[in-house]
Length: 613
Image (cartoon, rainbow, N blue to C red; front, side, top):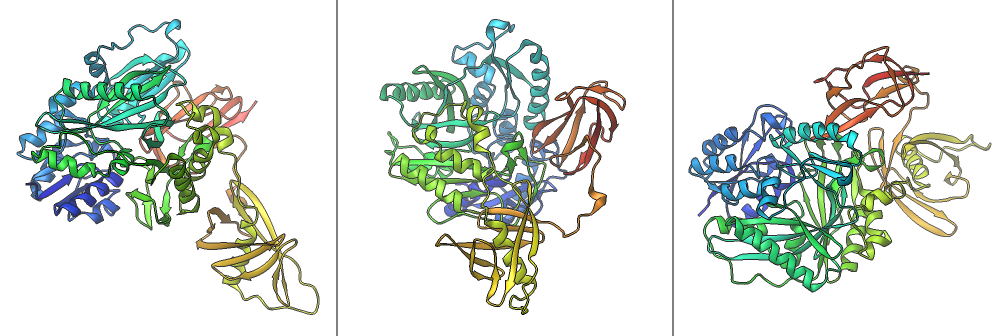
C-alpha cells in the first residue's frame, strides 16, 4: 500500500492529486522551484522539497532531482500530473529503478505512444514527408508533450521553415524534446477524445467521450462530456479504437485517445499517456475519482468487468490569466481574490493573494458544472463564471461566458475553427456603463464624508478611470440629501456598496479596492491621478512589452538604422512557456533597440522605437 506520494508537478494538478491523497489517507510531498516557494501546492503538501532555479529545464524537467527528492522525503510513489515529465519514459524508469511506485503506464507504453510519430505508425498512419503545395495547410507538431505547445499551422510553403524552427524551440523548452513532425491540417472538424482506464489484469474501460473543440493556439479552452450529437455507431467506433490503442501497448492506468471527427469519421490524432487537464468532466458524469483509480491500479487492484454508467452532462472552462483580444497575451500580477458561486467545481493552484508569475502556464483554474442535461450544465457554468469574483490580472472570463452563450455552442454546432470565426465579436469590450459612477461614489465615501453642503450649488466632482483599456470620466455632486448624478438616483452609497436607480430599476454594485485597482461587481477599473505625470509619456513608435518575460531572439540583422515594414516581426518574447511575436507597428526606421536575447523584461518595458517614414 502507498503511504507517501510525491507529485512531480506544480499548481492546479498537484493540488488536485493532494486532495485525493488526503481522502485516501496518503501523506503528500511537493516539489517547487524558487518562484513557487510559497505556491498553493507547496502549502497544501505535508512536506516540500526545493528544486533550485526558475526555468522548467532547471526544475520541473529535472527528473534526477525529483527522484532524489522523493527518496529523501521518504515517498514510496510518484504521480507525474500532466505536462513536464508526465510522458517521459526515462523519468518513469528512473522512478521505478529507485524502488518507487510509478502512478502511470509502463515506460514501454509511454515510449510507444508519447511520441506522436511512433503512435501514428503503430496505428498505421505515417506522417507527411516532403511537403508540397498540394499538402497545404499542414500542422507542425511536437512529437512529445501536448497542451498546444510546439504547434504551428502552415498555409504557405515559405512559412514552413520558420514554423519548424519556432515549434522545435518551444517544444524543447516545454518538454525537453525538440522533435517535431508534420501532418495534414483538417479544418472544420471536431476534437473528440475517449478517456480510458486500464488495470494490470487485462481490463480496459472506455469512459465515454469528451468534446474539446473550442481551442486557442491548439490548446483547449472549453471541454464537455459526453461529446454532444455523436451517432451511436460513431461513439462505438471511438470506444473500440481507444481500447485497441490501449491494448496495443499493454496500457495501465488513465490515458486519453484523441481524434478529429470530420465528415462523420474518426481520424486518430494521438494517445496521451497521462491524466488530462479536462478529466473532471469525465469524473462528474461517471461519479469517479480518476486519481484515486490511478492509485488503486498502481497498487494492483482490479477494475470491475464493466465501467459505471454515465449520468447527465458536464462542462469545464479553463480560466486563464490572459487577454484574448491581444493575441492571447498572458498576464501576471497579484490574484487578490478568486471565488465562484456554490454549485460548481473549482480546481485551482492559486489562493487569494498569490502572485501569478511569468515562468509557467497561465491557467488560473478550471470551473466545472454538472447537470442532468447539456443545456442546464452550460447555463449553470456560464452563470457561475459571470458572477465569479476575479480580482487581479486580466482573464479570459468574459470570453468564456460569451462562448458558452454563443448560439453555435449552445446548439452544439461548434468545431475547432470556432475562435477563428468569432474571436473579434467575442472580445469586443462591453463594460458596465454605471461601474465608474459606482466606483467614484464608493471612493468618495471612503475618503471623505458626504453631507458637507452649502446654500450655493456645489461644483461637480470629477473622477477618471481606465475601464476596458479606455479612459473614462465621471461627474457627481454633493447635495443636502447626499450625492447626486445626472439621470441616476443614488439610493445608497458607502465604501463597499452602491445602489443606483435608473429608469425605475435598482441595481446593486459591490465595490472592492486594492490600491488604485477597483472591482465593481465584475468590472475592473483603475483610478487615474487628477494630474497625469508627464514623465510617463513615450515617444511615437515606441514598442513596449505587453507582458513580462524573456527575449528569446531578435530578427536576423536587426539593428538601429534598419528599415522595417509594418507588421514585420522584430523580436520574440517567451512568457508562460509560449512564444509571442513583437512586430513593427508602422513602416519606418528602427531608431533604437533596447533588448538582446536572454534578457528578462517586465511589463511596460521599452523594447524598441520605430521612427515612422
